[in-house]
Length: 292
Image 1 (tube, rainbow, N blue to C red):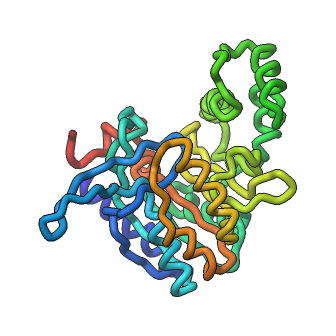
Image 2 (image 1 turned 180 degrees about the vertical axis):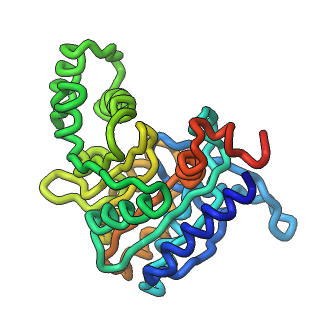
């Protein structure tokens, strides 16, 4: 397994280097947490020159890589260790590897084609399908996804979903989205594109639709990418809402970095999951070099 992992990682690195990407290494320990919806950061206490300070383990290298991108304006990639609290299953770990990269001058559709090439080179897949989130919900769940919360609730109840009285739009969407992923187990590798604005993350939004995609192989979510929002005021608006709702601090330096951010697209891949498929396994338990 250790030899297979080494072979796999070298293939990934070679893929990006041949396409003009520079490999970077950024801090894992951060002064501010990543503000990712539905993801719990790991808080740690450290001592700096005798002074106790609260810091955070990264949930992804997004913030630090975008600071590098803003300064140097180069295509960059990284294989980083990331940490997410309260996550453990056959597809989740608290500590895991993430592949993240940014392409200057590109949009999310460029990344989709790049991922096709990467996955073909690693796994040999020839056939892929690309469909919008709206098309996928209609095809696999017979469920329209309106922007209105009451209408979405009504649609889900009509389709037999259990919906709690306190469930908001995002909670209901996520519940249906998880089921959608299950429906993709027997489908070819699938890109779901053009997400509703409410789940745009930091993707650029046009006509109420986020230029964002997620990629599934055998029903397993592998990649999450988008055309990057580069307007610092819009980035601030989204992050302030998340920080306020979760009572977490905001990284002002990260917001400021967007003043020099080039137009670009970025993507992350759960590298352990992709390796699991590369190794012909069905659980992260089967490919771990160190058992927790």
